[in-house]
Figure (cartoon, one colour):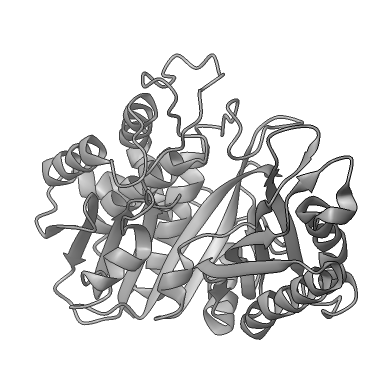
Length: 403
């Protein structure tokens, strides 16, 4: 009887979706996670809760991986493609400042990035897929920890899931994901073929000068003046040495030097980030910055030590799959729009390095102005759960449906 009702929901019109039948379940999951957020690589209770809920609704092949993550494999028993869907489950070290009745109960931790929406939507989509008799092939649902980055010295997130076999046995033909966005209207899908989110590099710089009294600067080598020159001149790497048609961001976030007002210190320490979309550009910019640093320090007679590390590659949407996915969304009645890339990073990129992937932005704003992600007042509309589940199930119907 239930199956017939669910099929009616899907076929009764273009504005109805099978996944909508599970809205109450999605809300319950989302609210539980929002009240009990956990930081990256610490999502033990989150994993246990999700595993319990998934077994409760009939999933049997549930595999723990990447410390606190889950892979759920559902086989229809009919030959077809392997489609993967991913949601991230970790929260942020943010103190919630909303008045939601289900606000965080954990001091200093909040789902301020919408991962509770991602996870609730994927749970609903998994239920819809499981109860859709028209689907063929195999479906892989990844509940991934540590997207925000594991603590220093720890492994985690997408790289560890991949290392532990998230994309093996079976190997997906394509993987889908999305992120909530408070600057898009509720239910609208933002898409872009190619680079949609940036590669993130983190650099460290130590400038070595010579200590002197502030009254006798000529007796020393001022690392503060040297480092200040580097900060100023570094922006020419973006404005004069990189192609203006290729987005590049270079930002300094830390500048530490000295302990007393009248002493020129021995050293200055700086750190910052580089964001790029193009792989080749991402390799060149740190080299160019190093050249600037070398020139400025040589001019001042100082020395330096520079290190750069790539924290996350850029998220690259497969062009052919993006076009197919957008066509499927339009046919299902979604409002879509082409969007500019976002220069923040997302470790979904590690999946797209290995298999074709499509990552979209989902509008979750139901007001004239909404706080965006990472704000302590971030309040995505709860109805966005429906749109997220519809996204995933639309892909399942479009690419995993028998002829």
